[in-house]
Image (cartoon, rainbow, N blue to C red):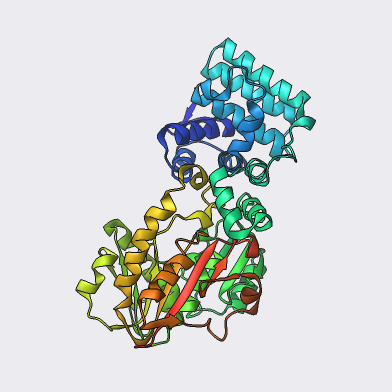
Length: 457
């Protein structure tokens, strides 16, 4: 095995196979393992891109791949060694979903890898399975006559329990659209720091530099970058002119509607994207307390504020449930509770979530969310706003929380969207429990729920 600079030389497919095997065996998140593996490996840019595509794509399409592979593996996919299972999955993913890779190259590399890692019997089996797949490729279709939830689950590779839940909440058509959107690559979107530069100026600079970029239709502060590489490596990012943020997430600070000179509390702030957006909207005039449970994340918030030139943000560490013991009642003009949640709105960015979440997760987190919103509520000044948001589509975590909260608090009422709020949001997003529910297919952005409540007493 050759070495250069102390790093191990591997191919894109070998790296992907190793990462997928570790994800399955250790339950670790693919993005962390993949980043670590890419940092250690010696791969050209194109090969690194292929490895990334193979890892995320294979995980995203997992149960569809397994459904088809089970036809060809005589003793069953589950009885194979984990690395062999990963190799067959990523090979079938290339055959079914990546048109640009020649089929013979897929089979050839899979056989070579199986010889390198295993014995002749394994390489013969891998060769036989993949050649059978190629012969019968036209027959690899999900049957149309399955019950709707099962068909959607297999066609778009989502757990059946999740599909059934969404069908109940949103209907079959919307559920299929959610699942299809979850398998589409997420666009790159950035938020412009308008304390430094206008969105129009930023767009002009990007286009002059050869990037393809368009204004976000979701947020007046957003730009969707359609080509141009990693924005975190640009001078604009380093100088604090832009932040990388999903378009749906940008709406949260708009809903907070902060003004210069206000006092604002962000209860669960890390890594600081929404906090810093609030600071930008306040023109860095006023006071923002950014709290997070984890002390190691406090630096993320502070670093973000420093990069963006925002001195109004103070980051603190603590349990959000304890905030009423630290700050006096009625002490903030605005309070944001971007609550911990099941995260099912960000599956397209984190495909692992589909397979690690359980039906019980939403119920367990909803109990904490209910406690958190009550803890935050007393800290809002009469006349002030409490904004509740999550990156999920689970009704129990979203409108269920708001409806139960309002039923027990006569001092709060639903506050309408800000006057300047985008009409396209009102047209496409769903109105749920007094808040807005954005589904992934609405704007090719994350699934998000946002509600704002006015303290009236």
